[in-house]
Figure (spheres, rainbow, N blue to C red):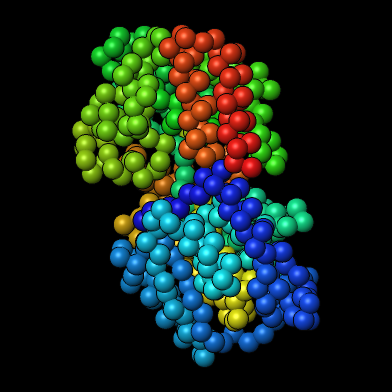
Length: 456
């Protein structure tokens, strides 16, 4: 299963391209017909009224690289929908999710041939919403919000051409974030594994304790800041981007320089392998080999350790990622959207709701071949997620993520690889002692802003 991620700068390019091609949603055109993104559509697809009409006709449903592993499941969902709604037909398209996905999606939207129901991520939803190609589900079906975790639903909005927030997506599935750690290594450093820190700086203090105890025999974590920025800043409620996303503002917060100072201190103290500062390797492999105390924050990593390193798994503990100033975690869910250009919008919306309902989300997330979590309240309350028994780390991780998802939001900072690299490279210089933390933060903001200006 591959997740599509349209980077920030490219997202702006797509927004500009789409905006040039379409005019958002409109109740009418020169010849009297309704339009969406420049495409002629049924009048019921746009405007302020609830969507009405018969659930019938043929629609197209698009996912990304799911058919090979989950063909039986989704074919079953489609069959159940068609049985419950006689006269409907759902054609399933599984996009390969390659590097040209964005361009093809843009071309489909501009050509008024975008699939009726489509799986999108946040940046893609941003672009398509601004250009008017997605149905405003919140307006067209005010009851659509009911199954979903309230915080997820509330935060899953994107601005239309007028700048108004619109619910053009239904939350589908998401991952989660937690701490995974070697309990033996923590205990040797005087850290209680049962009491994970509540702040990022508190976590850094634990990293320092491990460095003092390990004396280079093992380490706390990997050095490359690319695994921590901007996610740590999000958790600390440090604003990385301006509200319009066209400039950076992280240098305005004094805690950013304090953060960089901590990273430099940890690197110098030996909390991180010196040769990992520019390495692209995440903590997964070295953790499984007993070389670092903290592993990946992805819950699927716990299963990876269980399958590949039983001896380390026996020492593995899981804990809550520091909530810090944000007060909760953030998720990056995948979404299901309905094309405003659909010729059978009532059918498309009915299928989108059916696909994302609690029953189907729970069934898929129980699949032993996936490590994903649902976005409906009922699903998260299912005994599968809540009834963790014993001390098995994987069961505990599942329960922990399910619990934190009840208050999480979908707000996450999306940076293009170029902008992220510009920021990270300056932090790396500070970690090497080549710049002061304050100067590194200042230079990082200037370089990131230059790139954002170039992107438009």
